[in-house]
Length: 229
Image: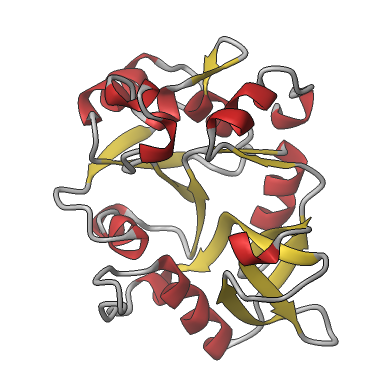
């Protein structure tokens, strides 16, 4: 199976640290975030593509030196045009019927990623108490996804999109339209997948997004054995 890790972002919320180090290479317990993510990939992944842009040389150097997966390739996003466009940068190289796609700045549980990779199209989701800060998944009675809504103004505990997906390759081959903010969004691929058939909401037992200094600091004290295969 092919996997794609999106690692092209600027990491502005973690400046000044990201002025000299790309966010996926920031250290958590002595290892780059990207290394933890690769370590959580299931054995079924035999080809990895990492999308780069900001400080790309550092990410490329890490990929060359890492020994977790033999077939790892950089996919350069020349212009930052959104997460959907980042994924499209890999299209000429993708071959598997389904493609595992992960954000490059979150920590995931290995068993959760394996469960996502085993089935049909799906999104890894996790309960959150502040839904207005996340993309929120709404389910049908049968447990499949009805829709994904970005940062809805609702209260209570809801299922958040963790940024881990299993897409059919045929969906990723479809053209995207520019969003109102002038980018090509990965959420449009999600909506296409939903329109074409069932998309699973796969519950995560562990998820730690690293979007702030506080979250990064907290990661240093977490038990991360769950992130390893």
